[in-house]
Image (cartoon, rainbow, N blue to C red; front, side, top):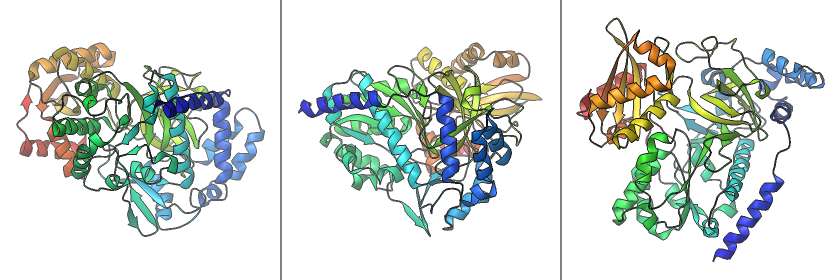
Length: 518
């Protein structure tokens, strides 16, 4: 019946009005930092860095609290945060960086590291993620959605909810940790359900979802683009239909995150029977950072009052080395000091016990008043061998443009910086199953990048001497990930590949594909 959906929709509109924020981003963040410091003041970290002295500065003006905060606490990358503090929590020590004992650690390898990272997930962080998830659900009232959508199921494709016990803690994918602890009122809407969600074997999980797809009325799908696309292809093939809407007629919303959706858009839409809404979300293992607040607007609003304090590091050579490692004395800014249109790396301090922690993402503000951002790349996922300053944002846009130029689908790609003669070159690996001339592809990618990036255009006539393009079957990208134990869930193929990963990838290609080169 549509009555329940209509009532839910009206209720959502009322709640959304009540949650309007009338406070400046700076005031929200000042309050957030104060609350984090008070809560963690008696932890080992808080006592070591004298949080009490920092807290006294909140009575003073001229941002004295932030000056003390920066002076007392050093910037932490993962190795420093884990090596100095988080590993103690894994041993069962209480009150290390956040009150209590950490019972859960999210495994997060991201796309830039070979080994897994262990990110603490505290009870307070779990609650914060739930609260932000509800906020995002409330934004659906801004969309032109039929009441039936609010009665239909939500398919969340993540890691297994089966968690591994390691002494005093459990480890697993963040999506698995959260899905295993969904509030009772959400259980009715959640698919694929607890039994299938616990499946550890990724291929078996996709097969099981495909078999059961016709039993569910799905209105919202949530997951990483590559794996959602693979799942929909599998469902369409299994049930011998033309598109996913023949299985799920009420599907209207896709919530995505983790990587730019642009390279996947063309292939994704081939699987649909009608247009749907795409909503971007910024949920990392370290916390729920931002989400898209308005329809048809490719920006996300930072969550400023729910367990995270942000600092912003201008993504410039003075603050980062050539490998994307942050300098100890890097310039850091609060939210009232940033500028629109400039790129910043993010430092987080959170209710999970992260302090001035470099998350690795690079963002750009599109609206300071609304605290709206777009993700432009990663601190380690950029190419600047000779000053070309090529960002992942540039790469994604170029791939989207060439996909349209040739009317092909390119769901995966990666690029490496290489020596060429006595200077430099870029080596692209393009994942597509469509027929395309590698030479023509190379010329178009090069052309678009020159138009998108002035520095790139300059260096193409100077030190950046060559662009190589290999066309590789899409399956090869996923096979390589599977060989690394990174199949499914929130795993993504790196957009920029370097060092040992590059050598391993090239060896894998020699053994597994007959790619074409320009």
